[in-house]
Image (tube, rainbow, N blue to C red):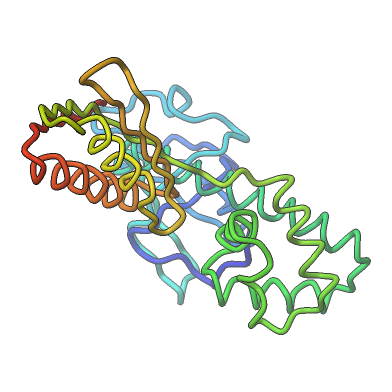
Length: 261
């Protein structure tokens, strides 16, 4: 895991390990804060009455908790399980898995180059400062290559090794959205006009998104957009569809579009 600050913040989601269970609550260690201690009171375990705490947690179990109070003077952290939603738990576990994967990549890079502890820490800090987290750094390198590292003044062998291992170990995420277009043209060169409109749509370029149009049988065509995230994909899909619509209707044809999924 990446090095954290001295104390968690109220409202923060954290991963904790159950250390001991008492009749009135659970003592845990905070995995992301150098095993700092925290306490989960029985009233914060579930929304209902808790008769047996061990039905909810067990010794050694790792659980996602929400920080509800922090006393830096007494070095106490109070936690809640009942205030953590299912979606929050899933997102936190995904975040943890990503962080672990990034650390694995960095360990491979540093071991291959035989870096000393000072260099390891220095280069990691540069990556976190630039990208926000180690995972965001290695994912960006996997997706876009060494060009995203050029301004960081890192050694060339470090950059090239990081790129190679990141591309091998990190699969850059993509999303895909699609819909069906129906195109009709009664003009003598209608087929050519349709082909021209579809080609223009496929040539839409934005943030690395890719547009593909497949013929399903007259007058139906399936348009697919792949991109790094939904925001980009939606933007490119809308732009491509509007280009086809404009070209077809301008030539006197008819156009309709239905989003799938």
